[in-house]
Length: 103
Image (cartoon, rainbow, N blue to C red; front, side, top):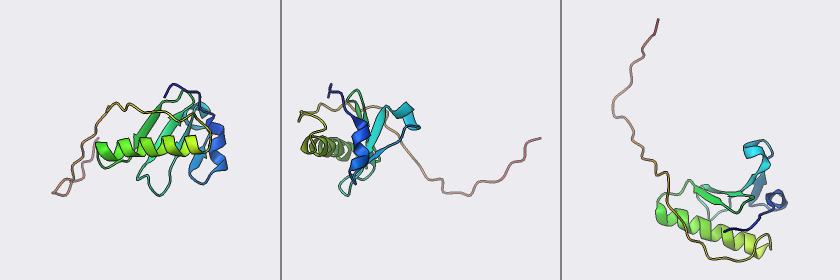
């Protein structure tokens, strides 16, 4: 995005959160009914989509966030060029785990 974002303004809106304790106040969070997880927005303009069920969903969450921020005049409308990083795989174990005591 390459734009400075005043993330402190996020607390004015029902979709936004801002907390000085996380990342030293260098980011805010966007979450509304169209976003499954949430989008972290750093003051530098970097955005991270979390909680999406697949790559397409994550990209849509980023686009939706840009629309929200542009509509509220927090940023200038911009085209995004997402980069996929840090893909995580999960698996549920089918068997019960046994308790191990370490001495």
